[in-house]
Length: 144
Image 1 (cartoon, rainbow, N blue to C red):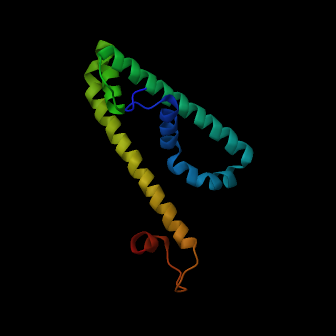
Image 2: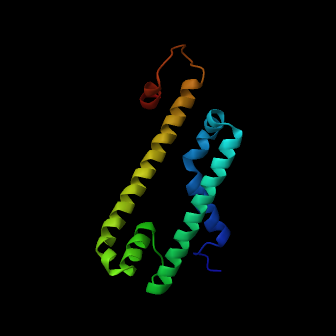
């Protein structure tokens, strides 16, 4: 096996790492609000749908790489090459969807960072204060 290319298990772990992200931080809150049975059912259903979409995306990327003799494609390139390979009447929007895909990825990453910051700030807010002063969440975001 080439050292530069990850194995199937390594690729699976990377996909799982991306899919879990900030959602795992709010699982206790989800279980508390919706109940154990519904949370498990919805969590498993969401996980199956997400993993299916991830596998289909990776397979499409591999097929397009072989077909066009490319070494690799990122998500936006996969979208663009998919549209360029598709029907004639959709080829004109390939570049636009590639740009849109990158914008969506940036928005998702930004929202993940905001979720982590809010989670950490609310955790600090719940910790006992050292100076016996009750501060709001925004002061923990900006001053601590």
